[in-house]
Image (cartoon, rainbow, N blue to C red):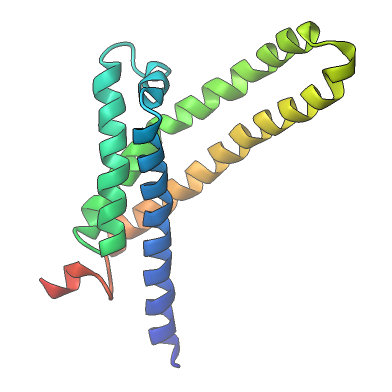
Length: 158
C-alpha cells in the first residue's frame, strides 16, 4: 500500500474515531441532563439551560458530521466551539478541587483517609489530563476544520 493511500485511511479512521468520542459524550450528556446545565453555570452567568442545550447540540451534531464526513469543516468547528468553554470548566475544577479535598479529608474518618486520598488524587488528575486532552482535541478539530474530509465521507459525494 502506498503512503498516500495509507495516509487517507489513517486520516479517515482518525476523523471517525474523533467523532465517535464526542458522540458518546454527547449522548451521555443527554442521558445525564441537567448535568450540561450545571457545567454551563461554571462558564455563563445567565441562560444556562440554553447554553447546556447548545453544548449538547454542538457535540452531537459535530460528532455526527465528523463520523459521516458530512459538512466536515463545519462539524469540526462545532466541536472546537464546544471545547473552548470546557477549558474554563476544567480550570475551575483544578482551582476548586484542592480546597474541596481538604474540607472533605478533614471530615473523613481516619480509617477511610487512605482510600479518600486515592480518590482525591484520581479526581484531580482526571481534570488535569482532561484539560490537556481538550487542548489536543481543539487542535484536532481545527485540523479537520481546515482539511475537511479527504476521502470516505459524504462531502466527497457532493
